[in-house]
Image 1 (cartoon, rainbow, N blue to C red):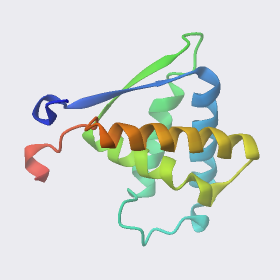
Image 2 (image 1 turned 120 degrees about the vertical axis):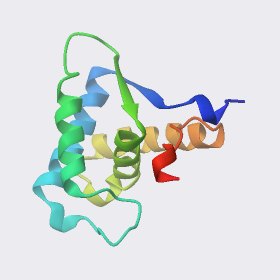
Image 3 (image 1 turned 30 degrees about the vertical axis):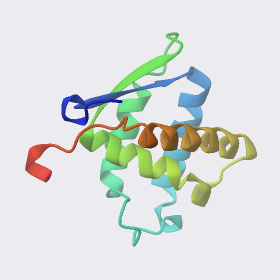
Amino acid sequence: MYNMEKITSINVELDQETLGIVIDVFEHALENDDEIDFSMMDLSPIEELRELTEKLKTYLSDQDPAVISMDFNEWVTYEPYVYHADDLLISDEASAVMSKLVGKYMDWRKDGITPNTPPELS
């Protein structure tokens, strides 16, 4: 079991193909934000998704897999948009990739693998 008090960031490991698909889905969300139901309480503002997407793009390289360190704020932007990717279906391939990520991150949650909430947000 993980000690949640010590987890301040999380490393997300994505192969380059998956990273490209995540970026494509997020860019689709940015370009078509009218398709997103922002009444869902867990979605961060679109500007935070834009900043995260720009960060993700910096990991597109020959390094495979990419290991992306996310702090609490980045994680709470990233994870819900991955979960709601079905609202933004751009292809069957993207749907399959995002569904695999959802399963992986749900397992992480069950195992207590998420960044700890910073004290100022508690």
